[in-house]
Length: 258
Image (tube, rainbow, N blue to C red; front, side, top):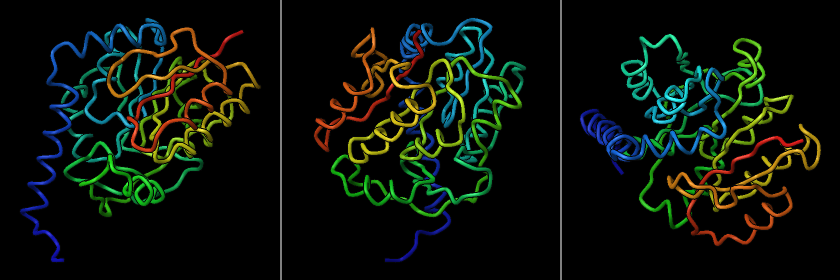
C-alpha cells in the first residue's frame, strides 16, 4: 500500500483535530456537566494534574473550579490548541511531555484521524486495534516525546488533589512512576485491555494500603458515577472482569478514605 502524501497527511491531521473539537468542545452543556462532576474531587484553590489534556475540556473545568492545573499533552497539534486557549492563564502550566515509570524518551504512536487514541503503548495498538470498537482506527509512528514521572511533577509542583490520566493503555506505566498515594485520581479503562486497569487497581492498593481507596466507574463522556458512594477493589475487579470485550470504555475514579 502506498504511503499517503504529505498533503493527505495534513488533511488527516486537520480532520482529526476537528473531530476532537466537535467531541469535546462543541456540545454546549458539556462544560457545565464537567464542572458539576469534578467539584467533588477538585477543591477551590486546589491543584489538578491533567495527564493527556488533549483538547483541554478538563483543564477548563478544573480552572472554573478554582484549581491550578498542570496539563501534559505530547501531541504537537493539541499542545498548540492548549497554548492558544490557556497560554496567558497564570494558573495553567502546559508541558509538552508524556508520563511513564521513568524519565526518558519514547515514540508516540499517532492516529491522525482519531487523535484521541494516540498512545505510547505498542501493546495497546496491537490488542485494542484488533477489537471491534477500534475498527477503522489506524496508528502510525509519530514524534519522539519527552517522558517524565508523576513523582517528578509532584517534586516540582506539589501534591495534586486530583490526577486525571487518559493515555490509551499506558495508565499503569504512569502509575508506576508514582511512589505515594494521592487524594483522588481517575484512569481510563478499555475492555479490550482490561488487564491494564486491573494492574492500576493493584498499584493503587499497593501504594495506599489495601482498602484505603474507594472506586467508582463512569462510562464514556456521561460524567456520572455508577457507584457514587464507591466500592472496594475486589468489587471493581469483578465488574471489570465481567465486561464483554465490545463494552464501552470509561474511567475509573478512585479516592482515599479513612
